Image (cartoon, rainbow, N blue to C red):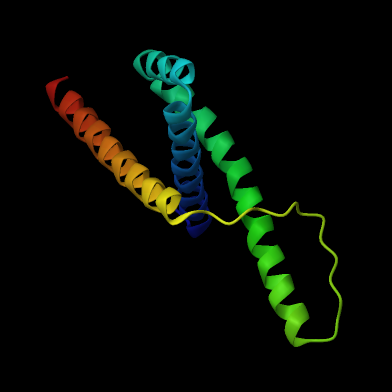
Length: 126
């Protein structure tokens, strides 16, 4: 396994996690979405993983844009160069939302660990 494939694997894992977290947040906010996500999870995990990877890719791009905007603002305040950005302003996140996101991320990690344990258990029984 070369370093490029390792990087791609890690990037996909990151995107899957990001997408899953975004889906989890959506499902917590909308009961109908929650039922849809639970039925998807029961039916096709690999398809859901692909959807999470795609959603994670989009979220990653948005996060990169946000960080680039912050860095550009920071650099423009220290240097006289002007930088124009097209990113939409993002409102500040409340501390409660940050705590909730951290809890959701921890829950997602626990779910992933449980899925991995179940996969390993299924692999041993076959």
